[in-house]
Image (tube, rainbow, N blue to C red):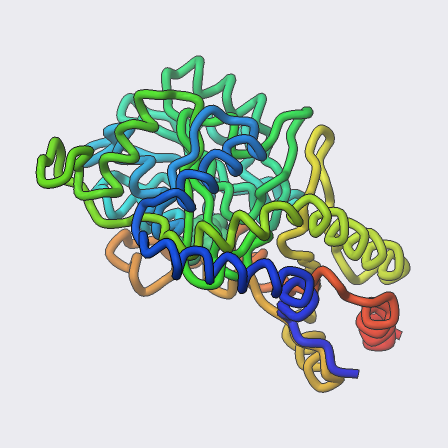
Length: 367
Ligand SMILES: *Cc1c(COP(=O)(O)O)cnc(C)c1O
């Protein structure tokens, strides 16, 4: 059997006719930038995420950068961020010239550990960026409490967790202003780059929509030094189609993950995903851990099963961050995760036979 790590086939089959119709609509309308499609998607996504405002932008990294800029986080400010995240979370802080303050995750949930956040706060701290890694919500009540106590801003990095829940509230609706990505592989993926900010603050929403469009509300009149990072009209039309299916796809992801966990439970050498109390997981990724990661990966690949590693090098050991002077050993949990994590194929439309083939192949490795 051949099981690719990523497959868009099932989702594409489901939406193909509607996606083609959306393309035709935009093509015929002849309005290609910041038109009705972007406005409609922003309204639909805000309603989905239960927030007042959604601002569509070019990608998830830009959403994070704009979030930092609307909160006026910049040079001289410190930003608390997980030591284990996709590099974009760190890059956004670098882009606004603020100081990155990495904090280790909880070693079971892989999410920012609220107990460690407070120790990292200094008089220069201005914001915390919790990342709902792999699709699991962070402990947002505790994080918001700490932020409130210390007068800090919170920006959720919700790129991997659209539809995820903490204590009955959706991720992307806790922070002062939040960022998400619609990169094709995300749970809600466009057919190209796309991203958005979500917020309940009208003033911040207004600032973000200025910044994404040259700092201009009225054409050729510029109020601030903005950038060009607009959600594409075509991508917005596509995303509106796919958004209607997101909840169903999340249910499928949860079911696949539950089957994986059930069928892998007998292998004591594996660490399976753990969901914290109050958190609901949307399984952007199903990540297992094992000391024999590289050998297991090879075994799976040799048997036709695609895998991923999220992520092989922690941000503090990336060449790009060499100037920060970090060394191996500085963030041991992030380093251990990088050495032991392995992501299994998880795509809506996966059959029971495919899931079972993956788990049998893994169990055989340990037999
Ligand atoms: C994908 C991702 C981003 C960046 O999104 P892009 O649209 O690729 O720029 C940021 N943070 C996390 C955690 C991500 O997974």
